[in-house]
Length: 261
Image (tube, rainbow, N blue to C red):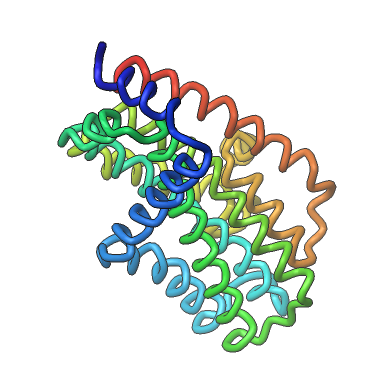
């Protein structure tokens, strides 16, 4: 019997209370591990905030008087992409390479606890990013936001981190640790650019503009803009597309993780 099967049987014999405790302990450990890694936390938190201050406040770019509000939505989307892509993609690739994932599978813990711990970390980071951006928007950029708008934006961005967790998980099963950072950046930055997060889609060539709905970042941006008062049509098609994307990509990633682990 291999180590994965042994861990599964051990997890199956655990009481419900112990299973819940295992999930909570793994989520806590994963969050603490990243909080103690300033090389991950500081860039993830400060890059979106710095870009927002630079373009919305210092340079005053955007859509006239609504520019700071519009850029709040785009940089919130840009910010919450990173925890899932880097927290899942890069760390999973590294942990597969150094044997930590094999060790985790051999431990008497629920198999999903490892992935749910990373997902919790990514969602908490997304929460911190969107709250920081809203504070800057209101106190520095002078954006007026109703409480319901702030709540909608926060929920959209925190839940919107999940598609990027799934995408990061898939990428982490595909490449080795040393190649993961380059591959993630190769996807992260062009995806933000082609989704209209740095400047309006109208500035892109027609062919690239027509491909924007392919990217999950485009749909999350539409939800973020809708949350803060811009008319982007019905939110449900965007939410449904993100949900379908998450399920399909996560299923493919789980299959690859079981097969190639």
